[in-house]
Length: 386
Image 1 (cartoon, rainbow, N blue to C red):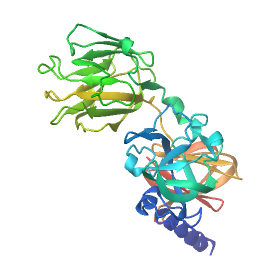
Image 2 (image 1 turned 30 degrees about the horizontal axis):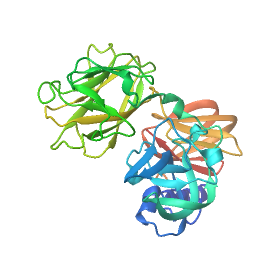
Image 3 (image 1 turned 45 degrees about the horizontal axis):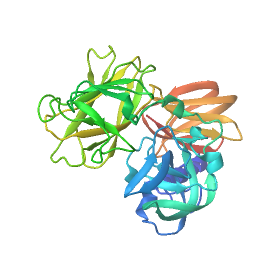
Image 4 (image 1 turned 90 degrees about the vertical axis):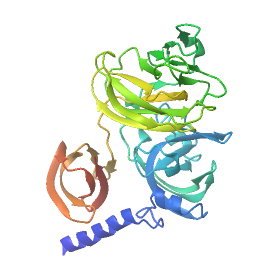
């Protein structure tokens, strides 16, 4: 009977995860479900990952951060996927009543953690958003601060830091960054004109080594980055007046730039500034190179490069109070930390029992990648194992 009741409760829980009604905190809408309602001005519970912060909307351009450093704005960006970079799949959330305790500048530990809120679906910064919050279920206490692994951030904002090799515009040069390291420019220049596509004042402008002929331009780091590379995020666009197609590639080197391993090449460039993400997951002392991968004269602007250290992220981390059991996932494992002996039951999303374990202390359980429901003391929690 007990097993049957657990199965019924688990089935109801799984159904709520897949098809939330938004009428209670136990059955929140996903971000994609909320987006589909198209600002109907009704109030719902909604759950998503805090993937960044929204800064401003000006001159038909959205300003936002989805990687550190953060400014501490009064609007979150939430999404269904922890690594989402597509703004059209995110929703801004007005957190003005919670900003002092939860903004990402002063509280970076909430980045990439799940949040459940209740608010009105309405236009916010010209996007489908959530305002007028009436309930707030924050991530658990003692959550891991992942921003400490994202400490490499290049903006190319200092014009006097660029020293060209010659009077030739694309003759190359050295950009001596105060933020990261020295960068070598080849077939590239400092892009601060009104036609350069950039976040703020400037970007790295790649073309050809002879302006209208020669080899494709590129930039690369002249010093190693320690602690490896987890993710690379950058913004890129085609130079404003240039026509036709263009493409670029991203490369890494573990031998101080003697050889370069491609991460991804032939990436089509768009007219508007677009964010790109590359999963590297490579330990060691590394450098990166970014370059055009075709011989057209179309210029490419590269800006706001974020590089994280090599680290294993927790896809979901949860505090199961009042039992003081902490569970989260790392690659290929369900991790736990508990001071008392506990029984843990792990189910597939369809309700099939995978395994039962008795746990105490800190440890992990090997699991194939996928979605799971973890039940401890009649508390069911969704876990994503990568």
